[in-house]
Amino acid sequence: MLDAEKFLERASKTESVTSESKLLDIFAEYSKVVVICTQSSLSITEQLDELLAEIRFLPIAKIHCIDINESEFTSKEIALRKISDPEFINMVLEISRKKNCIVYAVNEGIKLIAQNGVINTEVEACLAKTKTMQDQLNLLKPISELKEVFETFNVECQYKEYYYNKCFNSRGKIKAEIKEQELRNILLEFLRNKMKGEVSIEYCTSIIRDEESVDIYLNDGQEQAIIEVKFSFLRSIYEGKSFYKLQEKCLLGINQLDRYAKHLQEDNRIVEYGFVYMFFHNANNEQELLDVETYIHNYVDGKTLSDAFYSIYQKIIFNNLALWKSKL
Image (cartoon, rainbow, N blue to C red; front, side, top):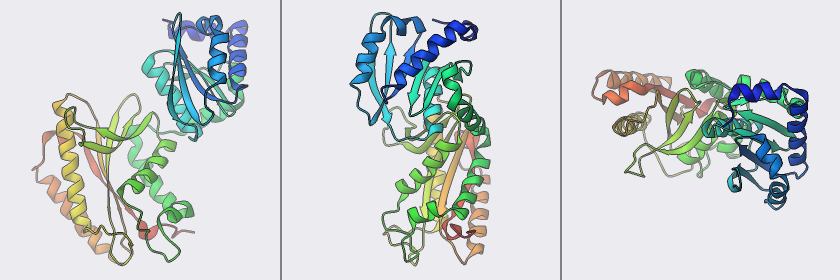
């Protein structure tokens, strides 16, 4: 197994850099999205013909991860091709960190080498787009700054038509097909473009109860967070069939988070942050939101929930769809 320091030392030498740069250029010629994992660049060179034959016949529409061992390699599909640059970068860095390996990755102009969660910027082929990617990566936030990212999302919802058009029809009503899953996916898409590390859905909080899955799970390599997504829309604005009062849905989210926290603690799995994310629509009644926030604050302060809950709970995040597109 290559030591990280040896890898970086080797990468700083011209002849090695040229070799690695050429490998990336060769992989990119096939116009496929591939992530190649190895413990030694020499293993790639020794099996290059077989590797290129494998890449040649991979489907274009998928992202494949190829693991190279001393005498063989295996390939498996890991994602759809249509993901953003930050998502792809995060995926590559997470793979290099989890597998403790060197990763060669190419995707529509992106060419990079990473090891242990760090991009090797010494490789010439990486530099054209990696500088931009690195700037993007530096803007990606750790989980400790998740509250600020939520605030940014709320602001973007007010300034951009994109989110409004996803949820509202031409009559200004929230579409019937907009339910918890669709709202979760809107938030998920935003977080994947703003957060460092893994951002995934339906994270099972119980080893023995598959149905106990929280909506969104984040892991930046240092800390972890879970987010339970809920919604509450008035009949007058929503064309769907699910109607609950805001306070009821907040309580439901809090109690679910409590249950998930207990499962995680029972299985000795660590999560540092827990949020309930509430999408709601309230155009004319600010007092209702204030009353709900006061009620939930008192409910949580009543210490009736588990110690596991209090060890991770941060707050309920409210996003009022009545304000979407209001700043245009």
